[in-house]
Length: 163
Image: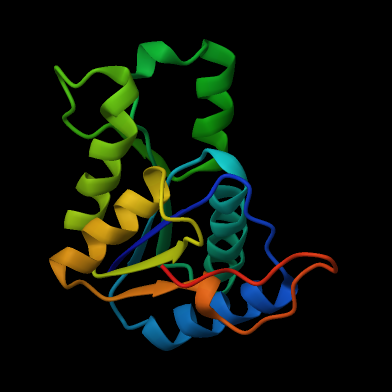
């Protein structure tokens, strides 16, 4: 099973978000290996990585893949070394000829097209995360928007609007 994650770079996850994601991952777990396609940019991607890493500690047949929108030569050797230590592998979708500013959008579509389930955190109707969310919905693939969960938010924050 392949599970994809995408959301806003300024996401502020809570313990309740994490518990919910882990509980759902446990329900989705089968005898087949679990492959997590992760973005590696922004706070939602860090949240997703942390959840998947915790899941991986319980389920040895799970793999954390960084799916990079950029060619390997766009990373410094030190950064690439750190990424290789953090993830089980790094994928570079075939995005030849795609201008770098559009690479993230195309990478997100590539991930969604290969996934069985997606987690998102989308509370604004613009940006790459919103476009990925809309694309996933158009494909009919199962997707859960964590912004729609009734979890406590840090004090002073407004609840998200429903996209």
